Image (cartoon, rainbow, N blue to C red; front, side, top):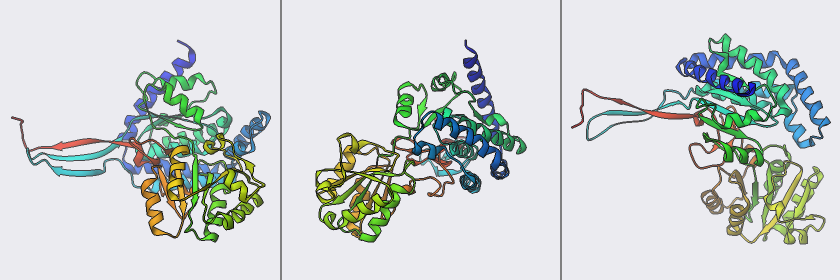
Length: 421
């Protein structure tokens, strides 16, 4: 057995023991750990930024794209955002022990309750976002789950700096530091060991990253997986849209931050309004530095667009690039989304209430939006404080995965001496 295998198995065993302590702790103790973590993040901005600079320097030396560097970069405002997210999670109702339903069985008179309980030990694998280290830790503490975190090598120094603070906060709150462990090696074999389940000590794997990472996890995992797929998101400008609203939303949905999974990657616009509205939207996007790749009909209206290839319609750019298509009507738009979307987030811009209802009812994505930017696809914006990812599957959890979505349940049955005949 290799040294790495031994070390990872030991992590799993420590996490399993810590999960028990975390589950049995009071909500107040878990809250205290989160409050301490927020305080420590604010008190250690400089060490965090120094570690992040080492990651950025290595990323540039390795030819990392500007979009990925933006995802990796921290500054005082972003560290404050991380601390604020932890603080919000601390204020979220502790989900453990909540009865989601209670009834008396009519046949036998048993009092039966469905009660929220932690999943156990989560293995969370993510790429170049150091904020996920704090978000994931906070959500796991809030939901009573132990966590083994494995970040990408590109954000390892930033994540290690944050992980030290997480351990300190846990211990000061009277909880084991092993409740949240960061794998401190860039060795990719560690991922394979986590996917094996570490001899039954990991209950759920949560991948957060690109298509290749999620694909590997889904193909190799021997434990349950809660998947976060790519954000192949669409904004559809319906013929009933207010022009000024449509222009403002599209620019924000694409260009606010091009590197986030909620960014719009394809713009669809009704043929009836495209001749007047598309040139305005195209000019707005171009002024922000966005490259437009258009279908044949779109390029007939805005000829300076780059011709869109077949691959463009299903590409998550995470860059200042957008694909533009003209659709006949709402049915055409929905069919396009069904064909090319990833089930993440789709938006319609319209003042037609019937069209909005049709879109929201028929589009089968984790998040559907009316008259707002797709960049609101974020756990913090949903009031969860943070998220581990946007789940695009249909089992257990869907959409932003916050503390409540990281719980399962058990049935608590109370009797008065009943015996089954």
